[in-house]
Every structure is written in structure tokens, then in C-alpha cells.
Image 1 (cartoon, helix red, strand yellow):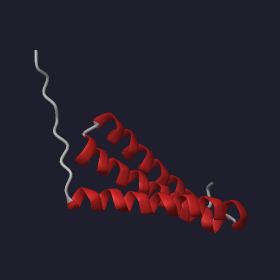
Image 2 (image 1 turned 60 degrees about the vertical axis):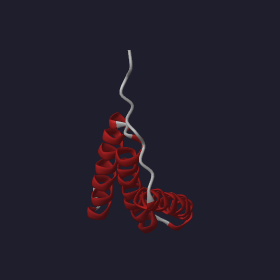
Image 3 (image 1 turned 90 degrees about the vertical axis):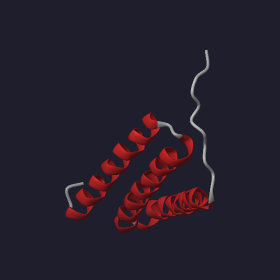
Image 4 (image 1 turned 135 degrees about the horizontal axis):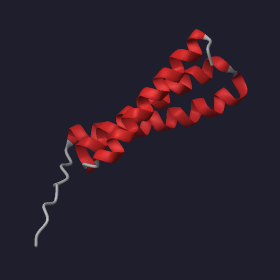
Length: 93
């Protein structure tokens, strides 16, 4: 019995998504280290960068890897990080 495989489509548009994810991941690492020493302002930037990185990961999962469960997990985590960033700006956290 044959199973249907979803074909992975790699093109310039998908490579752009992977490159954006790579750059955001480097920025997340950089701002994560800076926020340890510099304080809350950089931590808020770090939270939003993590959220954008998670949204990019969700996009790449949907377009390239076709893993729906991981896409949903990344979207929910990204929304949670956006909410944490907004609560940090307001001063609740």
C-alpha cells in the first residue's frame, strides 16, 4: 500500500524564509546574552525577537517541511511571547 508523500518544494522564496530565520536566531542569541547583562529594555526586545523567530519557524514548517503539529506549536508559542512582551512593556511582568 502506497502512502502519499508531501513533496518538499525548495525555491528562492523558501530559501529567503530560511535565511530570515537564521538571522533572527543569531539576533535572539545576541540579545539574549546582552539582556543578561544590560537589563529589562534588551529583554523586551529579546522577547519580541523570539516571537518573530517562532513565527518564521512556523512559516518555514508550513511551506517547506509540512509538519502541521510543529507549525501550530510555533504559532502558539509566538503568540505567547508577543503577549509576554506586551505585558513587560505595560509593567505587569
